[in-house]
Structure formats: structure tokens, C-alpha cells
Length: 289
Image (cartoon, rainbow, N blue to C red):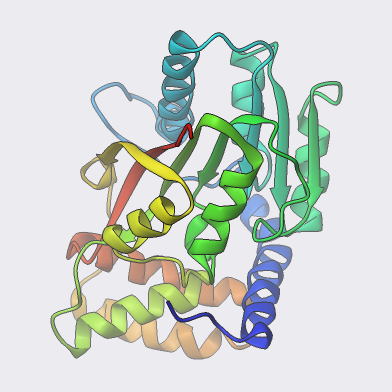
């Protein structure tokens, strides 16, 4: 497996950190993440009837996996780690549902860490500003989450290894993120995928088999996979307008990462609609040796 030079790795981490430092305040000013304290995808399945419920649906599905785990294991208290915890929305959701749980979160953004610390119960939660490629935690957690976070990784293998090192044997890693569903068929599709990866700083959007192989090498076995793409509401402008807007915003994005983020969002809609990219929930279990 090719490993990126250390300077490239540092540049990738700094790019993601800068992206969230610059964009988090704007996201919140626009109302994104203010109620759910997260900017996760809205999932419109047969259980959701309101926008708030759709925004929380990923959290609800995550909690269902946690409850299933707790039904199988005698664990008290539960130790839960969120890799790329953002504003702390998923941890706060789990804190309300699991009052005995002990929580930890990691985010590259100092702004996000401050907000997360403010909304989480201090007696049961710790949020650190750090890199999930280099976790400071021992193997104390029963469950680790990575909700729309692994896509930002420049080294998926390293993240899986770090998650494995932080988990007890038999612990779960719950991932919800974009994956590459197929190879682009032509130059136009390649441009859409590139615009998404660049705009959202997501080099970790890789094929499922690549993701599964990295997890397996780190000591995980696949427990479940669920494709949520069909539950997303996509908003696509006409193709010519979309392509022109994408290219203009990619250039304008040199001025501020928020503009490039909009370009990435536009490109993601197209990638999802064309099924180049899929949005999946994947549950891994750390092998018991």
C-alpha cells in the first residue's frame, strides 16, 4: 500500500483543520447544526416526517446499533468515543439516551471543540482538539463512532488501526460516510468526483472493498452494511448550470473555503444522483483474539 509522504499528510490535516475553523461559524450563522449541533445528512426514510427528525436520523440509527450491542454484552458503564465529533451533536444525543455512558470526542477544530464542551455533560464527557490518526487514548472504549469523518482521512489504514487500539476486543466501530460506489465512466464524471473531493476535503472517499480491506488489516470484521443513499433528498440544478456553477465556485473557493464547500456540495449531489458515490452506514467489530 502506498503511504503519503509525511509533508503531504500534514498538509492534508491542516487543510481539513482550516476548512472547519473557517466554515463552522458560517455553517452555524446559516442555521446549519444549530438545533441538532451537527451538520449530518438528513435521512428521509419511512420513520421520518419532519426535517428535525431527518437530521437526527443518523444519530437514531447509531443509537440503535449501540443498544443492540448492549443487549448482547454486559457493559456498565459504556465507554463511547467519537472520531471527528464536530460540534458534539451525536455525543449529546447519546448522552441523553444513555445516562450512564462515559463519552469522549476528538476534533481538529478548536472552534468545534469549544462548542462541543459547552453542550456536553462535563461530568461524563471529554472533548479534545486532536487528530484521529494519532489518538491519545488507551484501549478503554466499547464503541467508537466515525460519522461523516473518515472521508476526511488521508490514511484510512492508520485511522482503523487507531480505532482498533482504542477499543476493547469485541468492541464496535460504527461508520457512516460516503464511499466510492463505482469508477467514473468519463471525464465529466471524473470532474464531478474531483470537485467533491477537493471542495469537501475528502480524500478518504474510497471504494468499499478498499475500506473493508483496511478495516480487516486493523483487526476488524464486518458486522453490517446499510446503504442510505436512497433516503437522501437530492437537489440538482440543470446539468449545464450545475457544471458552470461548479467550475466558477471552485475558482472562487481560493478566496474562502466556504465557497469551495458549496462547490463540493453541488458536486456531491451529482455524484450521489449518478451513483458514483454512495452514503452508507457500516458496522465493524474488533476481533476477539
